[in-house]
Length: 106
Image (tube, rainbow, N blue to C red; front, side):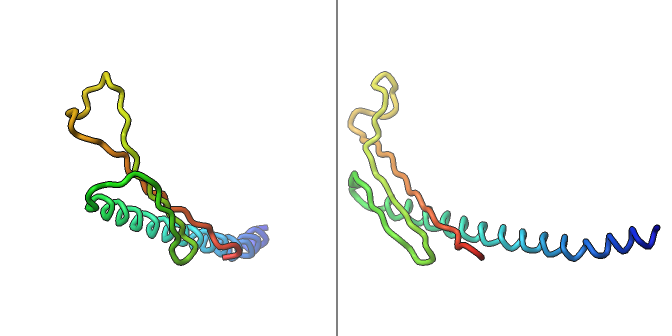
């Protein structure tokens, strides 16, 4: 009986190990894509910040490896009852969105 249990355990172990390693590889690919997207978004925000003066609008684009991005600069509309900034200061809302498509079958 013990031999049968040991044999069953040994026969299932390779399948489990393959599954663990393939899941790890998929997680690594997703992590790499998220890192690339984050670095690009940070770089885009930095370049928008140094542009003077800011211009309202949207700017879309594409990168290699299937990444797409869209930056947006809009005048920030605050509640007049809130004292966020002096009257002569204009606040802007700046955002960068990066998206990508996971390759199928990889």
